[in-house]
Length: 114
Image (tube, rainbow, N blue to C red; front, side, top):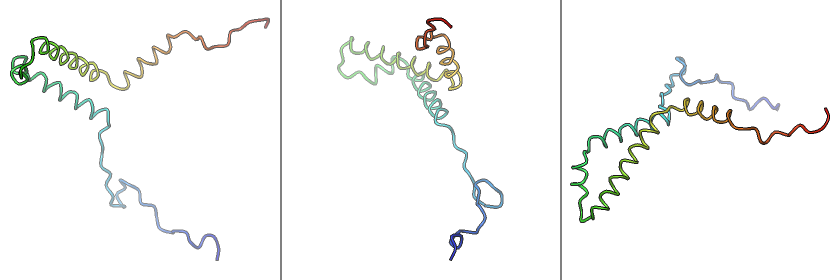
């Protein structure tokens, strides 16, 4: 009995090939889904006007508490807009530019003759 007697001798079955019959589903990327979710949340927030928001959430709160919640809601909207504005490629380009502008303090200084 040789080492090759136990091998499988069938052909490879690749996903998406016409002969295999296996269909590969296309998937949305995680960032794309997150951006869509943020855009949906932004649309929902824009639908709610300030009056209806206060009417829905007016359960015995002081005016200061209502103002605080309103400011928090506006900050969250701004954060969502900011996060949804840039793609991953733009973020990477901006980060690379930032790293390029940093001083190279970790380099070995050239001291001495040579």
